[in-house]
Image 1 (cartoon, one colour):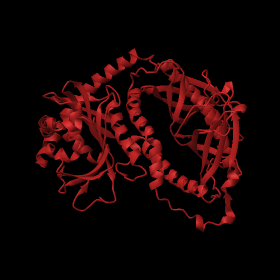
Image 2 (tube, rainbow, N blue to C red; image 1 turned 180 degrees about the vertical axis):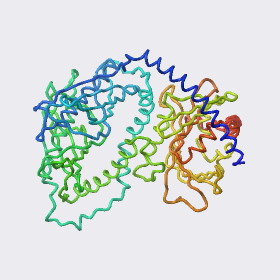
Image 3 (tube, rainbow, N blue to C red; image 1 turned 90 degrees about the vertical axis):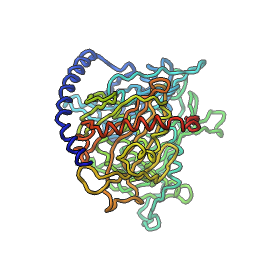
Image 4 (tube, rainbow, N blue to C red; image 1 turned 90 degrees about the horizontal axis):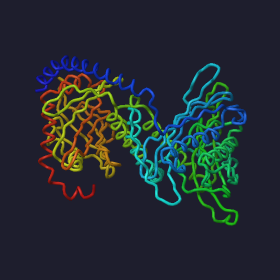
Length: 594
C-alpha cells in the first residue's frame, strides 16, 4: 500500500505544482491590483509619536532613560486606544518588554501603536519602538510591547466596537490576541503555582559571605505626590508615569549592588491592581532580590494613600525588572553575589531564581519566531502554559495567512497549499452537516481518531494537563518506504471561540517527555504546527478545516502525498465527515458545557 501510494503521489507532484504555478501567477496579479487599490491604507487606530532625545531625557550614560521611554510608550498606546474607544482609557497591564538597543542623546525615538483587538471593554494595543540616527540614517529595533487598556465612562457602561483586520499582519495579531488575553487572565495564578512547585537549587551556604553584598544595602523607598501633570483629564495617574517612577527606584537599588550605572534589559509582565488619582501619595519600594552571574532581579512595589489616611495604603502595582552592567564594549560584567536577609529575604531570593527560569522559558517559547522554535520542546511544569499558548497561536497565525493557493478540489473537498520560508503548509476544507460544537468535541479527543484516520494506528492519553490541554502518544504505520512504524508525542490544545466569528480550535504540536523517550521499535516523528478549526456556517452546518505545516524531514512525503490530494487522503477526510455524522447525537450532555 505504501509503495503504491508513493508512486501515485510522485506522479501527482508535477501536475500539482504546474497548476499551482498558474494559480499563483493569477493570485499575485490579483494581490498586486489589491495592493495598488490599498496603497494609502493605514490602520484607523494607528498613532505615531517621534521624539528627539535631549539631554534632559537621558541617564548618567547619556542614553535615553527607560522611564522616559515608558511614559512615551504609554502615551502613544493610550491615544491609540482612545481613538478606537472614543472615550478615556486607562492602562490595565503591560506584557513582558525586552529592550534590544539603547538610545543615545541626539537620536530620534519612533513609536507606533495600534489596537490589535477589542473585547468587551478592554483592548490589546501593540507597540513597536525603533530608534533613528539622523546623521547616519541608521535605524534600530528597540523593543516591542503589548499593553491592555480599559475604556471608562462615568455614566454608561462601555461596549467596544470590534476591530476589522484587513492586512495579513492585522489578521494574525487579531487572531493571536485572544490567546494572549487568555494567558494574561491566568497569569497571576500561573506564576503562583509555578513558584510553589518549582524546585530551585541554590548554594547560599557554600558562598563566601565576605564577598557578598547584603540585600538590605540595596533597599530603596521613595514617595511621589501625584499632581495634575501626572494624570489624565479624569484625574487618574498615567500608567507610564507610575512605570517611570518604578524604573527610577529600581535603578537606584541596582546601582547600590554593583556600584555602577546599570542598564535595564527586561520588565516582567505586570498588572495595575487599582487606580491612583491626583492628590495620592505613592510610596515606591525597591530591593535587589537576587544577583546572577551577569544579571540581577529587582523587585518594585507601589502603594498609594491619601494625606488623611496614611495607614490605609492601597497596593497599586508590583513589578520585577532585570538589570545588567555593561562595559565599554557593551558586554555584561560579572556581578557581586547578594546575601538575602533570613525569612522574607530568602524567600524572595529563591523565588527570583524560579522566575528567571520561567522568564527564559516564556521568552524562548512565546517571543521567538516560528522558524526558530525546535520541533519538539521539552514539556515541563514551568513552561506548559507558554507551550500551550505557542501551540494555539502558531496555528492561528497559519490560518490568518493570506497567500493560500487552491491546488485542487474533489467533491467539495478543497486543498490549499502555502509555500513560506522553508515550510510547505497545506489546508484541507469541507462543509459538514454537524454543529460546530459537536465537531469540536468529537475531534478533540485524539483517542477516537483511529476510528476514521488509518494513519493513526493507536493513541494513548499520557497526561490530561487541564480541561483544554492533553498529551498523547500516537503510533502510525510506516510511511515513505521506511520499514519501522512512527510514533509521536503530541500536545493537543483546544480553545472555544472568544467572540462571534471566532472558530473552535484544536492545535497539535510535538513535545518531548522523559517518560516517553525514542525507542528502537519506532521512528520518532515530529509535527511543528497542525490542527483543526471549526467555523459555524449556519444551523447544523460547519466548515471544517485541517492545517499542517510540513517540516523538512517530512517535506517529500507531504509534497507528493497531500499536495497531490491522493484518493487515500481524500478518503481519509471524507471518513472524518462520516465519523462526525455517525456520532453527532452522542454528545448532548457534553454540549451543555460549551
